[in-house]
Length: 479
Image (cartoon, rainbow, N blue to C red; front, side, top):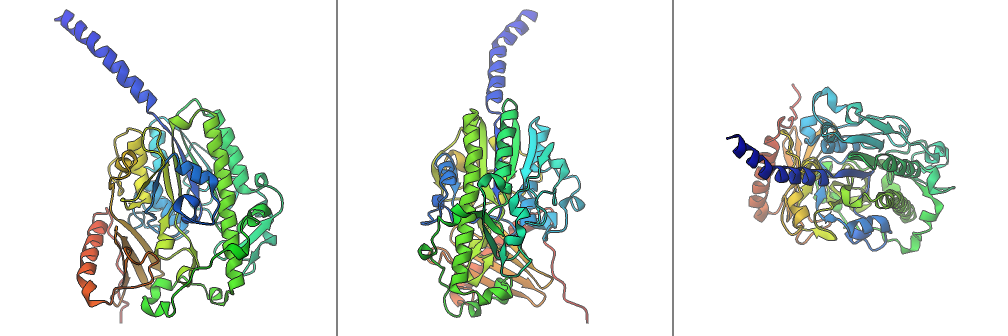
């Protein structure tokens, strides 16, 4: 009996060692790179003018998701959803003030999960919400339990604030504003963050790590050194064309985020904004390149999953809108690149419609761990293995208009369907992406689209009701 047990142990021992070695080899690091307010105006997404060579190079070694969407087009709600793996109606974070721990005190965030697996977990810059530029250099609305260490960079973009041009003098973060800065990249907040990230990687190269590195650009004010502005001569830029009578064909809440001064912008103003935004993208791209090059220099490239994304998209005049806070495609869609050493490279996941909250289960699954209960997202690993596969076929983005309306928008492979829920009822939008990528033809009032909208409404509500906390409803005022 004892002899048989010993022989069995001898047979099983190599298999056990092999399994342990495999686990050791596949305990991938995670480098989680975020930009702030970055839309898909990038070379790897087909933009003809924007220069993003380092992000484009990352795309050559990654799966690029062509249809990725945020869950709320505002910094804190979106980042909270992404890092908790829960929809905004579960976190109840719809603004820039409420911290998710007041609603979900015991939730295990994405970085916390990896901390529990023995990883060294750290934050550099903006991962949770920070007011930009007011809270640069502070902890902002950070979650201390998510990190073992942190670094809050601050550069001359903050100290040079008085030099920034703004359409609303003295206002920067929520207002179109910019500065072609003196000095070089290393003096800027994001340049300081990139340098610190390189030092951090060198220090922790021999241990499993989860490093979140959040860059502040291209968030307003669009500050970057002058050389980046010079990359975009205004005579080469192209302004979006909006059809006449646009607003008459959509519910008023669809464009309620438009600011008063934006109606007075001249074409020269718009070109200035476009130039400054593109300059900020190229500046952020350069800082990303510094970090990625360091990762390779240290021999960590084949040991590290790299994610690059943004908290939401960004309007540059489409629908006569600027910045964020709409549920149109340009505001809801985000760039998403995932490099996994064991999976596909230089391919686009064209058939999947995915969400930022899918990143939590994707990284857990991609590192070989069992998914925790309570996540609202879906692992995208099947699409990382084979980008032609459909890992998921829907995304929901929602937004509030104060206490007056709630917008819920479902994106499917063919349609964007939006409901604006008010105290008086529901107003709708329907766009067919097979023939209207810019979402300028609202089909909601077409009689032959009624069945399509009923099916999409049923699909969206079914998804929302599967949440642990259903959406709140607007109540009619008494009296």
